[in-house]
Image (cartoon, rainbow, N blue to C red):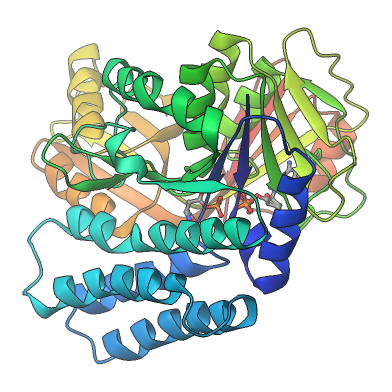
Length: 418
Ligand SMILES: Nc1ncnc2c1ncn2[C@@H]1O[C@H](COP(=O)(O)OP(=O)(O)O)[C@@H](O)[C@H]1O
Ligand SMILES: N[C@@H](CC(=O)OP(=O)(O)O)C(=O)O
């Protein structure tokens, strides 16, 4: 069986959904599970809606109307009036109406997951209806009953044993009868609340299903020819990799290559399942294959740029050395507040960490750290990681930047700058 993942860019409009149908049609006869993300930039719009709700903003209803109109226009282009998908989509949006009628719950991350998840619940209804309308028999599956997580909202931790059991119990039978269409990015808790797996987590969803089902391969259909040595949105003259090893792909995604979610590769590596990254605009092209024993061919350095970084500098209040006990306390606080450290440095008197900046989490961690330490920080920074670097490439890429932290290893350099 195969697992396909279609991201937001591939289903951003009616033409995208028609194209998805054509790609799927090429694989008729092969058992196929399809993971779909929210359409276009819907997740960003739902994040704005969540903020507006929590802050009691007047923008709440206009934002919601815009999200609904975007989906209804798309439906009108694809389906005759009266098709049951109109009601399915409307009923899903009603869940937002119910939630925003009440006063916001205290836990922002909990509210976020209940509201933002609607993007995937709606997109999968539309894709499923379109495939069926095109004669490809397909079943809509609520992923929240299959991917079981803890209640770490916005970063649900997957309970692999429970997830594997649920998936293996039902999905092989469903796949023997139909195509299965399900939501990326979402999970469910044991109390039946919705969780999300972290932004851009639909790639990870595809990998979870593939690993549990022993799929032949996973294909993620993207708006790029494959994995390139740098993000083509920011760099010209990029080169595509035909193959990449799991290890190299893990390193790239860990440091922020946003083309694949960082948690995606490991389950596939453990199960020996290849991951193809292919362009949805040219479905017969080879793309990039991530697999065991791949030949990594680095004709150019790999450049990974991560924005929205903060540099935290932590020292003791009595000017004593930073000890292992202090470090243990600091990491305990990071773990408890879901702060991810990308690069760090220790000196006699201070510990410095470059971390992803999320406003609410950051404010929380600073408050807790300040109970025991002196804390200074800079935000709005960029972390650039260059793998397989050359000195001229490094000099060119960092020209004119104010570097706040730097690390150089044999293969990889990190630079944090303004
Ligand atoms: N090394 C890279 N190679 C290819 N694309 C990259 C790379 N790094 C970042 N990207 C970005 O990843 C985007 C595709 O990923 P993403 O937007 O998450 O796709 P989707 O959400 O449709 O699955 C591309 O449009 C590109 O800008
Ligand atoms: N819709 C979610 C999950 C996701 O993976 O989306 P995409 O496949 O478009 O990156 C997000 O935008 O974060």
